Length: 179
Ligand code: NI
Image (cartoon, rainbow, N blue to C red):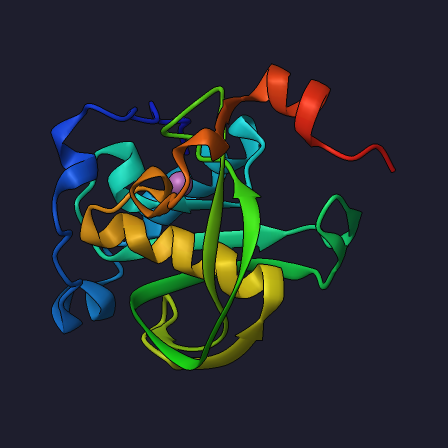
């Protein structure tokens, strides 16, 4: 177990399409040490999701863990730590909603991004078992953000109105509505 360095915008790995994990890699258990490191790194950084390319491993793997409860996004359903291997996302309803997103690879900034709010996710877990989830609202946004990393896309690419890209301190001061 180890905390890995999270690479930042500008590192070329964040702009590559990550490759699929092979059936042999899954069956052989070679991913387990990577996932352990990703979990340690996510916990240390205090985020809700991490994709393998963010620690400079260009594989189609992401982890998501959402504590749930009340937040500035409203009431969020919790999601226990989950591993998604070779995920595919499909839009069920293209109607969008926007959230202020942040990213461990783009530290210090927040940006307002609109994304579809009803999606289906298909993936495999660490043991190769199929996962299928339907997600709405903020969770749909979180999954799209994480899986975008596997295609070399960052949330800043999806900001339509660039006046809506701000520093965290200014976000808290001028944008965030106090509870
Ligand atoms: Ni990110």
